[in-house]
Figure 1: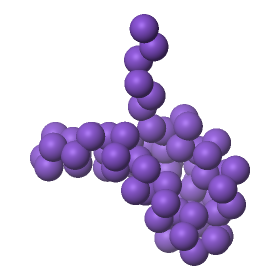
Figure 2 (figure 1 turned 180 degrees about the vertical axis):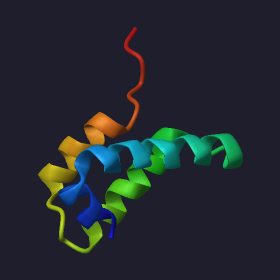
Figure 3 (figure 1 turned 45 degrees about the vertical axis):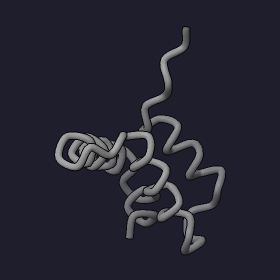
Length: 68
C-alpha cells in the first residue's frame, strides 16, 4: 500500500511519511531516521517500488544528519 501511495501520490505521500515520522518520535521516542528506514524497507519489500525510486523518495522525506 505504501509503495502504491508513493508511486501515485508522491507529494501527499511525502507529507504523510513526515507526519508518521514526527508522531513516532513525539509519542514513542523513535527517531525519525529509524522510522524512515523502516518505512523505506516496507515500501521496497513487495518489489512494487524499486530501490532507486525508494532512495529518491526517502532522500527527500527522511531528515539527514546535520553537516558540521
